[in-house]
Image 1 (cartoon, rainbow over the protein chains, first blue to last red):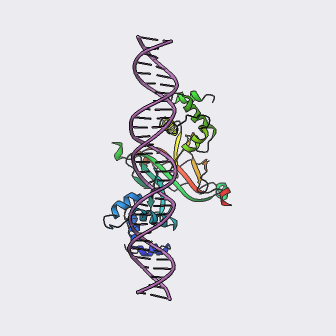
Image 2: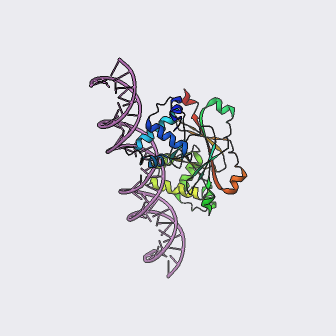
Image 3: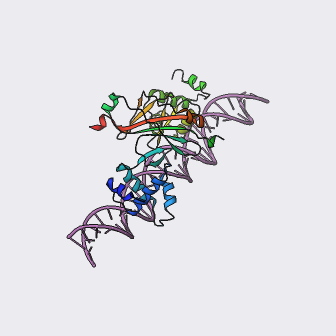
Length: 132
Length: 132
DNA sequence: CTCACTTTTGTAATGATTACATTTTAATTA
DNA sequence: TAATTAAAATGTAATCATTACAAAAGTGAG
């Protein structure tokens, strides 16, 4: 958990124990977990943990620009990589991989009219191991 | 509703009255409606209409490759344009616009490993009228 | 120590989607 | 045409991630 309190503070987030735990989890598990997955791992070591807290914490992280929210299959997934990149999701097992593809820039005429805040580029298909 | 029965038949779908109505709606309203929107419009003229039927019908259309499903904001939206293109969604009013951008092709090494079935490129932001 | 504020928690509500059983409609055959 | 069978449409209840909200616990300044 080295330096995590610093990172949180840099993003204007008071580093409570739980927030540090959640961020630490995200840092060590970059497989785009959803709330349930984070909860299941942290709950055993934090017996009083509530799922609502995970929701609150992640909302705060997103609001402060610390993590990116990725809605896939009616579920929110979280990613500490905030630089633009693409994703692949296997429709069989649900796993999400990062892809080093930068989403194309919008035509200037749209940029002038709209205020673009986020881009999401996702490829759906069946991963190697699920094809067998 | 000219020729709609033909289009359905071409996709191996038996053209029932309701299926034709749903497809006709999609053809005339290309603003990527969700189930609720379609239901609200069709229900008055088809008093016995059930929402489940709309769900069933759209599932069938997607399965037969007649329409594309687009999950945005935890909701399924439907699009009769099946050629690859991008979307813009306003996070304030929810409106969805088509963009003439072709999502970038995947690196051959990924294409070899995975079986890609769908690509989704979406820009999120605030549209012109919501910025006021 | 006390008070005010923030963080965390628990429960109940929401809302889109699905499961499933039943009813209605259409098509086929005798 | 009536009977039989399959397909389509319907209604209700269940599911599940997320949110709303109020209460409890923790933290820090004076």
